[in-house]
Length: 281
Ligand code: NAD
Image (cartoon, rainbow, N blue to C red):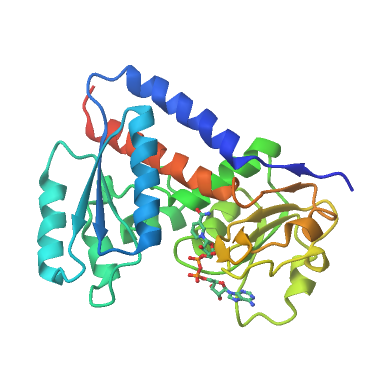
């Protein structure tokens, strides 16, 4: 079966160009504060990429690199300071945090209006309610845009999500329900996974295991979205064995160049939207 690639890199660039044009028309520029704690190399790379993307489209971004031993209270005080700073429109705390810090408490402290990662419980609640006012988490928001780039109306389709993480699996399931998909969430306790996935018109895979999903799991003609980013001796790999899956899929996302770049584009969009929301015309 002929398959097509959903090119996340191209789509991300197009979205970034559109936001750049809109920002060029503003009187001031949106401002993102990024908090990076410690010296996790992967986190440092992610933050550098986010900074670069901000610069390219006219978002001012400042990274606060804090010591790995920072105390919970100090970090909380700093976030409150950023919440109160009217110049700052978005606050992002790069995860994972060092083990001694309480991640949920920190994320809950960010002003929901400045929560450009969409991880604050208020935004999670608005997402579950299907509210248009929710700031949506970047990766699931990007996945919906990728799906819409190849299929306008998703209603009635069977969607299967593999993985139930707070940042990908659960929110993408909510968004697919909002799109009127019949949505099933599977996870590490699911029995006979392929019996479920073989029924999926849309298959979203977010488990963190390289090449875990192959053609045996995929219905002919399915749209396959691979969220996984796994470092292996053979380079970056998704959770889907691309060469096997492409023989069944109608559309499939590559790794790299799929969901990853869309996540960055959605962070920029969320920062721009947070700016508009906080700025009186
Ligand atoms: P996580 O580790 O928080 O959750 C993994 C989920 O997979 C769990 O819910 C678990 O139940 C499920 N799972 C594990 N083994 C399973 C199995 N055998 N069968 C079915 N389900 C199983 O992961 P996460 O944070 O959602 O990340 C998943 C992957 O996506 C990782 O590779 C991560 O690096 C990547 N990721 C990519 C982006 C991006 O922008 N592309 C963003 C976030 C995460």
